[in-house]
Length: 287
Length: 287
Image (cartoon, rainbow over all chains, first blue to last red; front, side, top):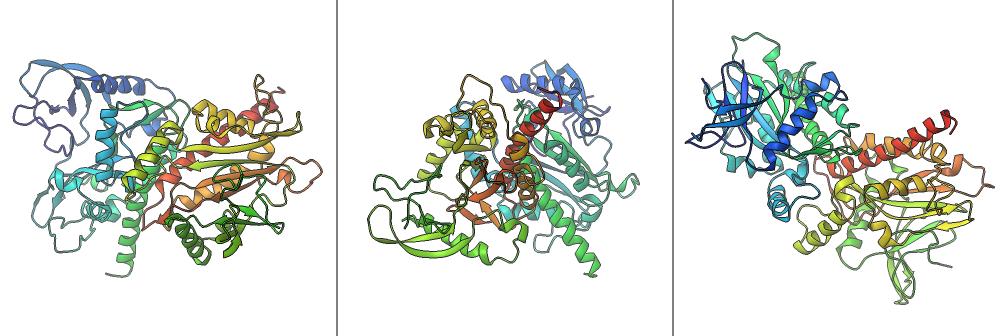
């Protein structure tokens, strides 16, 4: 019944007998508890978050629903292992375009080991984490001209500089992401990023919470963006959604706002806003 | 005519024949151009900023006025040297309390040398720069009970952890900062931090600009807070003022917001807001 997720764009992949997440056909995403403290920490976060009365209702929807820890047959054949049972964010989409963006200008945090610090800061400096306050971790975009998905290699994605990240965010909402020589058309920018239910609106709602929340510090978390490309689905416009994922490094806020996540989120919002505005101008001018 | 500034709380000090800033009695602060690229870079920033038409008028007032580079007799006896001629922010105050807070969760930035990176990140991790997104660099507070200034040693200030920084921000607006065993009374919190012309209002005006400005990245800049303790001066309530200072490491924004400064600024604002709110509650309850 369980299978390898079709639309996962970042993180460990359950392929070739490796340990990774699985999904069922009921919309549940099973994420194996990582062996070290990270798995425990992520489970602890979901337990805390799901029972925390100080989290506003409108914010809960930006997190995957949590169904506890369950024993599930692991993808690497090692038998039954504990998995986090989470909402499968892309369940119900037919041809979802998906992008994973890791937020923050650092992925390390106070009191980590020197080994972990060195590993993180090296990657933070090599990617756009330091310069932009976020980095694209992975993406998968449906190309309407080619009727297939474009999914750049992980090494290519992690090598993006400022312009590479901006182009990826434009391609994500374009009908021609595969056409490398052509300017991405941003055909869906106003529907997916813009609009009253679009991604920008959702990001701004998250931003308002992060401005003052001191409950959690979301170190090394990602924003997952999803929308529908199947034309026969006439749901809300393209069902554009934002979800926060990956909470293995969440810490208590202890009265301090999560300035690292917040700064990166606002930088990301500026990129999205620029694309929405330039696509509006483009349409108004008839280009 | 030139003398060593009386109220400088951070940076190089012109004392014992060392090179440092000087002030005249006309309200000008002369800052020697540092020998390496930093001096040139700071002069370049002031030239660019003072002629930049994209900087809103309400934001200009948060920066010291700039009067060019002038040749001035250096404080270390080495003869005439080029100095930045700047507005002396504390000129006109009789008994100013002053605090210098370096904003940002890092003081290094992309493309610095490994030597500079290592020096900065060590200090960033040892201080509250990483944890809070700001660190107190120096302060000088008038104690009304003792009728004198309290000025903690630089090493003490740089060793502050989260609670130390919070206490310093409370003492800064207290009439009894020297009384170590007593809770700081936050006697001036509502006047200095709060109110329609107070420091919180000014910080929020700055914040609104930083939310979208992509002109400059203010690496390693400080916020200077000043207010008057002389009771005979009946100007605006205590003349509380915020100024940005130290622009030796400012870079072009290149279309990206200064997420590092912005995140730290918002964290700092949360601390100030918490003190204003707790002092209001305290008064309402008659404590």
